[in-house]
Image (cartoon, rainbow over all chains, first blue to last red; front, top):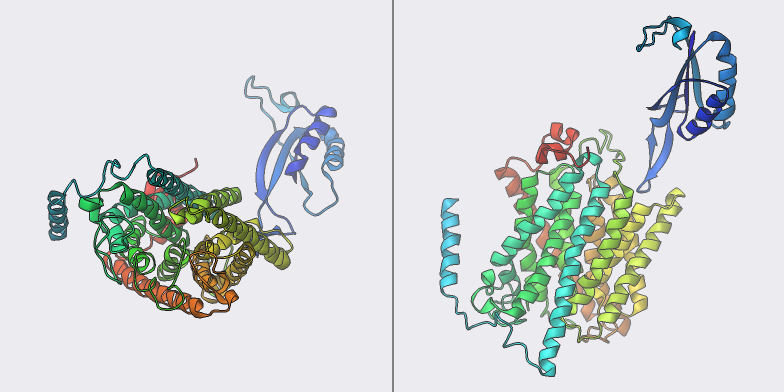
Length: 112
Length: 452
């Protein structure tokens, strides 16, 4: 089992969410986060003076799934979230040791 | 302290006992009659009262404007200071500020005593000053005094002790503002200068905004910048206001109030010049906003709307002194120049003098207070109240205005420095501790935040 963690533009949430639903992804966790990458934020102007906003609002989507779904999900996220400009975000893949459903106590793939 | 209190109370009681109820006209019955003259009183009372209410409404504008310019954690504190300085100022203006300002002006019965330098009748609005005429004048003037003290709030926001600001407002409304006001409006020495018709400040570019802006300058300088505003190498950081829409709302409410501020200053709507004055006010505001908008666009390639708001207010302040005396084209020029001066001054205050003024009060009110006074001597066309400026070929009025400017600067900077240094010593510093500033003054001063 793996965890796919995608940091995307906040305005791309609906597109990514809908695309994931369409390929049958059952569950996901979404959080509003702030951060920056190599670009180190953007420049804004307040009262004729430039300043840097280094932490920009982003959306983090976490999905736990079986290994064989990985490529399909990554492709779906890329298609939906890509604009080609700086600030599109990143996808991280982790191994997941186990999953436990709290309601029933089931473990492993059944609990996803 | 007790001695002073006892002294004030005994003066008050004595004055109250000496009150001769028949002296003034507290019921209004003697003033009003069914004649044309009586109706003139009525309509002029209505006009002046309505204008006073409009100027009161400028307090709402100031709260919105300043709240937008400060950080989220200081919003409540800004609103509280802006509101409470008004209330504290009102009490002292009733006690003695008004008497110092208008005593001897003869603007209403009960204001008979005073000389060219100070007035001394109309204390506590009792005796002869318990009169319908005086109450109209008092209310209108009170709103002006409170405007002057509220202007200071913006420059010292986000770091000043709440109490320090209240005490400063009491000083401003009780002594500093009334004395200069007496010289200019209470038949004082500036109003009666032998040049031109004497110095003129129609609705208070100098008396109200100049005083407020210059005291804001002294206060912001003595109190020091906000924590983190300037780096050790002297460069400044941007501390962004938390709601820029509030700045626009505040500005619009202020311009609305300004119609009362300027046009109401005739104290009579039977002076039909009011329509010219109101139009001039708005033309100057619009010109100021547009000039600043394009200065901002030229510098940054963005339309800096908070700058344009400062520009609109700069235009309003600049036209306040001359609105009654100048033609419409001059209102646009006055507002536009005022706005450009504000832009230059914002730069100097922050980058050269290293003074931290979160809302730009010094550059908007102080600088344009002075420019507004001079503009009277330049653009007045002689069509109203016989005020003739440079454009009619006479320089005497400009000389009178220049003297008024120098006096204003000397009076405000001198007295402001003395009082604030004294206040700093007796209350142990004018600013809150740095820990409170970092946490936000809302919680430190008021126990809770503006937002959850």
